[in-house]
Structures are given as structure tokens and as C-alpha cells.
Length: 357
Image (cartoon, rainbow, N blue to C red; front, side):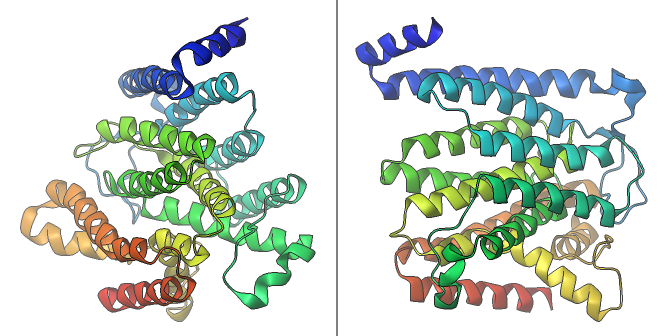
């Protein structure tokens, strides 16, 4: 009955009007979800989700903060999926299942359940492989000729897509250490994805990106500049997996755009993981255990000497995301040129390495 009302409203008012109306309501609901979670989460399960471990390498806060941001994100996304179904009569199975399972994998750690990083990684790989293979999720537009046989090899295609998910999800979790660092980065990415899809009339994908922007903005209000709530591993895995899927869908629906542009868009998330992996191997450390030598941590140490720990926390996020935004802007000018997009992607990796050194 509700769908019939919406269909009639679409006819009279237009699809764009009703989408805007629903997104406005969704934004209001999302804000109150984060407000309630941040205010009352310390009472849930005797405060088991409060992050009070100040000794770990990635801890840069001085008071206990709840890690229930991921829970607020997943509740908000459930509401959005219901809205999307009413608007388009379509259930987003890929987003729903990948998001829930990745949130579950991260939320295990948020609940302080003792699980080794290697076990968590294997759990993530197993879930992703099954979902990518069964749906299937493919990258249809690839600007690398020797990978053109991906379409004919389902197994190789699944492994390739799996690696893309792993890099982005773990990259999201890796930089989720400072107030606003991850959320602002993902907002920038989603804004660009929304622009691309709206420009090319891919409105059903655009509205998914807009929903992510709304969720991330609501979270940022409670996380930046002073944190009242953290995403936690569950939230970082959830948002990282959804942004990876959004990028794959945008790439597939816009074949005129170079696939290397999308590589440029996530170069920071990708290379943070890849560079860290190689660095730890070189230093004879375990690649899957955290340390305090990531780029954002080194920037933080430099800033904190001058501005103090609390101020350096959010200043690090501002500086890194400002530099990231400036560096990806040139890619928009040659977004349809595979050669220039490729060169710029590798130039960004070189720039990152030089800055780190």
C-alpha cells in the first residue's frame, strides 16, 4: 500500500522531489541515531564498547570513547535500504550482505572477543570470496590489457575483486585512528562518485553514495574535532566495504571513465596498506600487527610537538585530507584518459613514498 502511495506521488511530483524528501527524512533519522548511540551507549553491556586502551600504538585519545559508531552506521543503512526498496523496488543484496558480514567481522573485536588478526583476516577473506563469487561481483572496465581475460576466468576475477576489497577495507581500518581522518576521506570519495553518477544520469547509484555521505556527515558531527564516538573496527570495515562496492559499480556503469581514475580516488587507502605491508616485511615485523609508523601517525607526532596532543589529533586529519583532495583533483581533468590517469596514479604513489621518507 505504501509503495502505491509513493508511485502516485512520483507521478504527481516527480522522482527527484520524492528522492530529495526521503533523503531529508533519512538525514534527520540518521542524526538522531548517532545522537542516541553516543549518549547512551556507555550504559549498554556495562560499557564494554568503551575504548579505554590508551597503550595500543593507534590510540591517540586520553579519555574513554565508545566504539559504537559502526552500530549507528549499520542501523542507519538498514533504514536507507528500506527507503531504496520503496523508491526503486529493488533490494540491494550485495550492499546488504557484504556490509553486514564485514561489520560482523570488525564488531567481534569491538566487543573485545579474543580473536587473532590472522583469524579475523581469514574470516573476512572467506565471507568476501563466497559473496563475490556467487553474485557475482565483477570489474568490467579495466585499463590493463593483460588483465582483459578476467571476464573469461570467474575464479581469477573473484580473486582480483577480493584483493580490491581487502585493500580498501583494511586501508579504511588502518587510517581510522584520528578524529575525522577516515570519515572526511570517505566523504570526499563519495562526493566525487555522486558527481560522476549524476552527471551520467546513473541516479540509482548516486543515491547510494548520497546516503553514505549523510551517514558519514552525521558521524563526523560526533567525532570531529572532539570525539564523542568512534567507528570502531565494525564501522571501518562496514564503510570500507560499501565504498569499495560503490566504486566498482560506478566503474562498471561509466565505461568511458578510465579505471585508473578510480585507482587514483582510493590511492591513499590502498597504498597505506600496501606500503605498510612492504615496510613491515623490510623491518622484519609481522605485516598484520599494528605499529606506530604509519604516515598519519608520523604527521601527528610532528604536529603534536608544536600544538599538543589533543589539537594535533584533528589537525592531522585536516592536513592529510586537504593534501589528499589537492592531489586527486588533477585526475578529474583527465578522467577519461587512461594513459594520463595511469601516470598520475603512479605519480601519487611516488609522492606518498617521498613524503613518508
